[in-house]
Length: 372
Image (cartoon, rainbow, N blue to C red; front, side, top):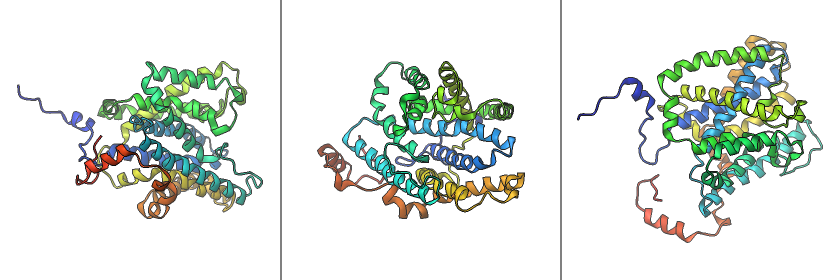
């Protein structure tokens, strides 16, 4: 039998075939767009008190932007096996940047007089650095989640129990690490065909009314409930809610975030665009934009003019945030800072004989193609 030609919708849903060793444009696009939303959300924070609309949009964005980013992070952590090479990359790619930026943010916080006496503490992540600590822990536990029979239900139970435990404390921001865990585990169990499902034309069309409904519900909810449930950093008791609210809200927020993250991913283009190359630098944008966000609020007075809190000003703030984080993801910014964000610490580790043999076996192959 001759194969039936694919329809236009099916061709659109299928990921573009990338040459061997080349990054997948869809995921780079998703990471870039998610990090833009992270920056925009931080830029909206000082505008919420005077605008119910901004507060509603802020709640919707916080419902899915970090879950989507964490799901993708989990998806690309599926191959983590705790081997020597993986551990080295974990240390150089997460642990070292965590130490550097935790120190830098603490000193910056002192300089801006937010907390002039705050000590440098590697156990109490400040501002954005919680994600580095969380991703370090999640990846270390990946082999466990790959072995258990029902990883996602188990991760949800862990998150639900965390909301009952205000005594977890601030060490490594474990409360947030545990409550966001289900999104990472979901990424671990997803397969390429699952992403193809949300990229179908029907899903993209359906995402429009879903997001419209989400904004409408958020607008209604702003004066009636706290959006802190979507931050996943507090227990039920710390949010002045009965204990049983915690497990219930864990499931509710997980469902909401999952639907909105799927709608977001449905809109992500699968082809190469002008911002695809920026997807490789999202960690730079994430870690660096916090200095601009904090400085604009506490030092430079960018939010002081009255016009900034009006619709035109809110649009300008949104655009500036998107432009700033975009610039921070570009190669000219990444190159001079690579020694901090992606340090080469080969001298600090013992060379693994198996990896050396693998490198010799792959010598002479085209760049980007490796064995094993």
